[in-house]
Length: 467
Image 1 (cartoon, one colour):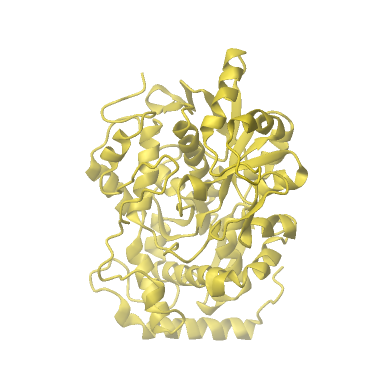
Image 2 (cartoon, one colour; image 1 turned 45 degrees about the horizontal axis):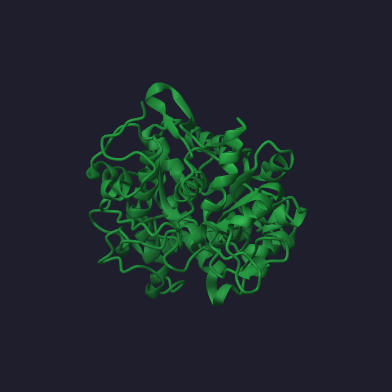
């Protein structure tokens, strides 16, 4: 139940005002856009899905701070059992949209897993994940990790420290099992990236052969575990480590069952994480509604980061509610307020562990989509070679900065946000400048996906196909 329910009178008033503001901003729409001129939202009553992770925060904040209502939207937020159930809900219309893994709209569009046309016009956050190992694995890794003058491990920790452990398991004929949340999740690709950078092969997919285990030729066996179940699954010994979003890395520290060894910020600085996804058909049927949703989410993201994260304690209070993330305040606050605890007692400042708005975090960059597609190709989810132009075409089909720009320009015209808060829409290409802040120092240029793949010693490239 919402703490502050709106009266019917207020609901009608907000809806009327929102519709009026949309009409006033008609001039902001490009004459060439496929989206209709702004007007009253087509579908005011909406249901959005999410998974119980802290990066669903923009949805919770847009709801709790009445940003949805400001746009004439009356939203129900509903936690989903897992990522597949969530995606199916968006596809079959049970859900109007959802907090999604960035790889989900792309995977669905290219037909890896469930085939459907899903788009995103809003990126929900940067960073926010970590890789955790059990206490026993940490004990075996620790002698391989350099220490600083304070006696603490030097970060970032390379998977080279894990490699002798994995090799000892292989020598004994025991699989080295690790968990990630979904085959097209950032967590899968980040875990694979970290392992491969340390010389550990994370395995291939071979959909053309009917093998979607992702474990072909693998040194470490990766499999799906739902985020809230990660700590208990590791504690039971089913997996020896995992990659997941918060609060489930910090939960392992609080429970004393494991040690987070690296954050995704250290694997790829300011990497894109979740997106808000809707079906393409829903977006086409509800263009004004879609723009209104994006406006509310942009405002929520801005609120989360404004005044140097001053609102984060209040956000943690909200997220700790059982209807959102439902973890203890202290567990969520550990990362949401700019710190991260590795080994018990080793708490470090990581101010950008969770980024929701700064660094243009909400803008759906084509280059972000391209990175995900390169990793799908690298590990065999895209079984056959593709031209650079193919990557660009898919990125532009799924990521929709044109819709984002309409929403942002309306917020600027309404005086809710400043033009300086956004990219320069007149010159923005959708491709970030080449990025080099990866743990292996390999540079990613989103306009040259095949050249990027050629740089990796482990992974498919060129004309290679898994036999």
